[in-house]
Amino acid sequence: MDIKKLANSYARKYNTRDPFEIIDNLNAIVVFYPLHGVRGFYQYFQRNNIIYIDDKLSDKEKQFVCAHEMGHMLLHKKSNAIFMDSRTQLNTAKYEIEADRFAINLLVSDNELHDYADFTVAQLSRMLGYQKHLIELKLKDYKIYSKTDFDSYDSGE
Image (cartoon, rainbow, N blue to C red; front, side, top):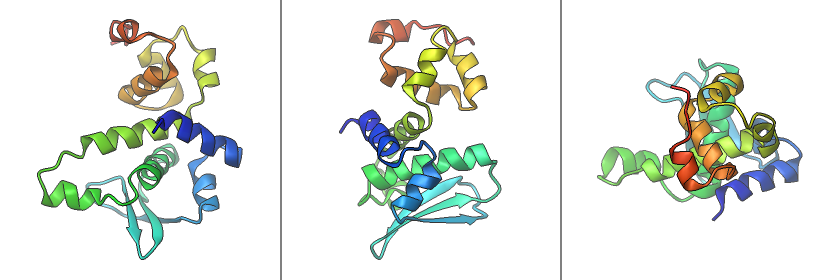
């Protein structure tokens, strides 16, 4: 499945990149609660999609966590990552990277990146307010750089 296309299809369908608006249209439940040691998680329970978000996060962080958990909802609906992470030896990193890719592609359009094509990863990170590794995921999906160009791309560190 093309994660970038999926994220963009939801942005187009609902005419927004705001994950809270999209989630509302999908009739998913968002619960803000003080979570300890985790920023958020997704649960599929009794045919309900539920996203839990730590209520102490900033608005920008809540928006990213909502988009990330929406990625889990759409990409990994039947996977119980909490169980897999805490009760098995399975590596859940692949799921987390896919959810991050979905989130950053939903939140940051290609048009935004095109406008700042000359910026470094560090500059984009500061300007857009997302961690460098998320900007790097977006740039890989943006395909402005070939694989080899991206690997040698100056991250501004």
